[in-house]
Length: 314
Image (cartoon, rainbow, N blue to C red; front, side, top):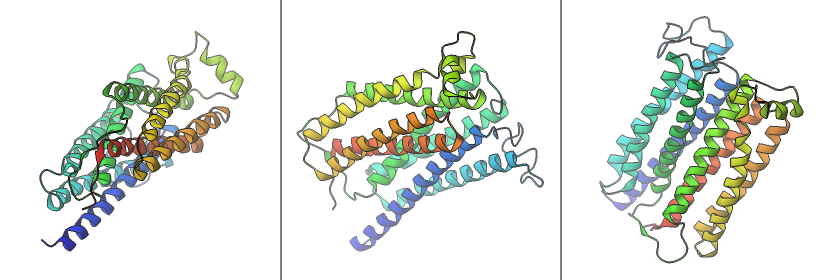
């Protein structure tokens, strides 16, 4: 196979992988709409059927929202399957794109099973149980892992040659990366629970909401949502310090651009969190907040991978 044909195939794969990544981000945001509008029970406790039908013939708005989410999720699954097949046709067996594509498939299957479990066990709608909070947390963790592997599949496909470990310069230690991972999980899980609490127990004003947070008689979903801004602030300080140290010791423009992108998105995310708090978490602001969180996570995953390797463009 000629080099021009190989480059063309890689470019097509990269475009396709980016499209699948974008599709999954949109599905994550639509999933937030499903939760925020209480539409998770729109298809009843049926899965994969919707109210016992393949296609609902007389759907209500909640049914349309949930059914659209299921259709788009199915399309994303087929897209990831196609990405795995194309990766094996496009890249050699040693290339990491093939491995990341396969891991994306594993975690999108897990994602589907968790979504099915939420419906079949009726952990949707107005359910306020600790079981729902637990499954929602697991769902969020799996979503972040899936998004990370999809991001790496796309990013690595832009570099035809296997890359080597970057030499010299500061790089976050395994301990620092583990701490960051813990912060990400705490911020993400606490954010998912806070969003669930805001949906199920809305407040009429900010003062009332804060009073409920510290009221020992409040539901546990309300009392634990106060941890989200605390984790977010401490996590932001740690991450910004980590990224800044990494930028100081690396002159590569690609690393510096990605690093400043992470810092900028982190600042925007903190601002969005404050706006969400003061506006009492309207649905549209929850979507903006989640979108920025997804972009921040993708940028950080790509930044860490780029910092660790010295890419060759062929």
